[in-house]
Amino acid sequence: MTDKDKPFKNIVIIGCGDIGQRVAKLWKNQGKSVFGIVKSEDSLNTLRQQHIHAIAADLDDIETLESLDERLLNNALIYYFAPPPATGIIDSRMANFLKRFNTSIQPCQLIYISTSGVYGDQQGQLINEQTATNPQVDRAKRRYNAELQLAIWSKESDTAVTVLRVGGIYGPGRLPLQRLKDQVPMLLENLSPKTNRIHSDDLAQVCVAAATEKAAGEIYNVSDGTNSNMTEYFNTIADFTGLPRPPLVDWDEAEKTISKGMLSYLRESRRMDNSKMMNELEIELLYPTLKEGLESCL
Image 1 (cartoon, rainbow, N blue to C red):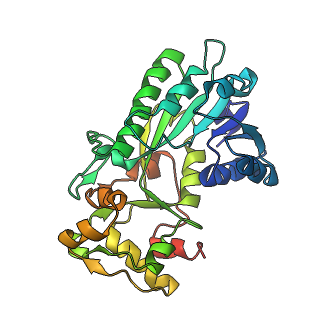
Image 2 (image 1 turned 90 degrees about the vertical axis):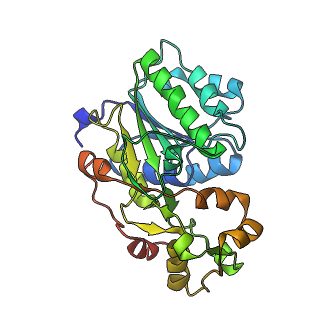
């Protein structure tokens, strides 16, 4: 990208956790100034150790958001990586954040990490960005609600919003090693749903590549494009790390032994077409397969 593609003055990352820190590192390598908005003192210290400008704010507390300097947000590239609340179907944190803006604040672009869960269960079918949304569980409904809020705000503020609908994220510190050690059951492979994933480093480079005029206002499905299922995912990690594979059960036994949260993932099956991401953002994946990506995780 050229400087013409990046007219923004600041880069502001709302919810600057693992992915935010990886994105910040890529921008800092290009000489850009990055500000991370986080809540806890531990998170503030983590950002400072990485020489990221750290600012405290609580998305559940509008008063702390009102203290954010307008000069920080004006002409800024904003990444919104903060999770929604843990319950309900409304992302009140997004609502609080958007209330911070007024007519005197004009960001250049906002990039939001959403979830592939907004498509709901597609029975293993290949889906693209034109596939109708159909969120079926509350965690996906909260993300879709945030997308809708951003669409309205984008029109009212004349600020371009780019939405990244991301499958499962894996990477260093993001492997289900404890589940494997605890021998938590998994579905029989012939019952296991189709899933999509992306390595955290590849997601970070997608986030940077999305900061262009061409990507402004667009939606992208984000995954490495490989086809697999949830059980294959756990088995591959087990074999790579030398841990025992999980015991496999049918649906009747799964209902008794697998958590409600995991069951909600296992009830949805879809394959994501990532060709728009690959072609328009000109992505060259660092880890196009899980086996290649696992070597970076340990």
